[in-house]
Length: 325
Image (tube, rainbow, N blue to C red):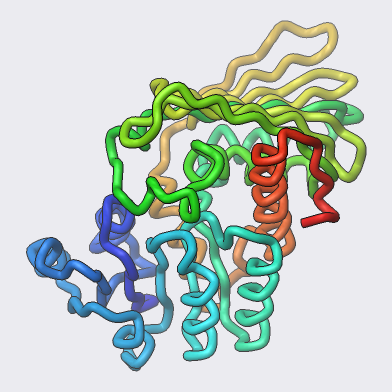
């Protein structure tokens, strides 16, 4: 059992605790850190962990083997480096960093300290996405030509926090929320991106924002792609990979459609899993040395580089090469 500290107990930090505490057989929280402790004392007591107000308290606690960061985005790099220096494994909610250079620094700090670095992209653990990845890797589609993705939800309006209204914390409309999940999926499936051209259209600002981001991109391999995210529409998840011999499409968490040349479309439905608990179990297994963490650090850096390029493209309304990030 890995003893961990949860840093940040807002909406998402609480979701993490609720998914893991007393449910996972591999990780538990023994300490929590919140800048507003009075608002979460009952929550901490209910989940049986000690509460304090500073990250340094968790880093100095000899019980704590790992820290989980559910904090404002701009704090991630510094907190990862501090945790690594203290010899603690780190699980960081997305985005790992706001810029590629900071992601490189964070990865290097963990590598130098010999600690595991995990990132919060639980959609990778969805049954539909696991099977989609297997089909693509298995070669059933032939040469891959094009990828598309879409992820929209209403979380920004329903779970609004003032810090998320800051352009420094949440640039690019829904990119730091739903957009990063779909971008991570596309990097996982197709590899690093070469260039992007993105547009942000805003109809209503925070709180309860109404906006959309649309991105066209090209992979380093030459494959084409596009994705979009809308911050005022009910939940939609779709990732579609097109090849010369067919296509495969993940629809939501548990459904997959395979379309092969000369065959009828095949719909597959999978049993739901608790993907938050699954990703923390995977992190705990990596910290314990049982298996490597399933997301390579190179992909973490590639995703941040692509995110940075998207934000630059939105700001400049131009094509951005990732080599310039």
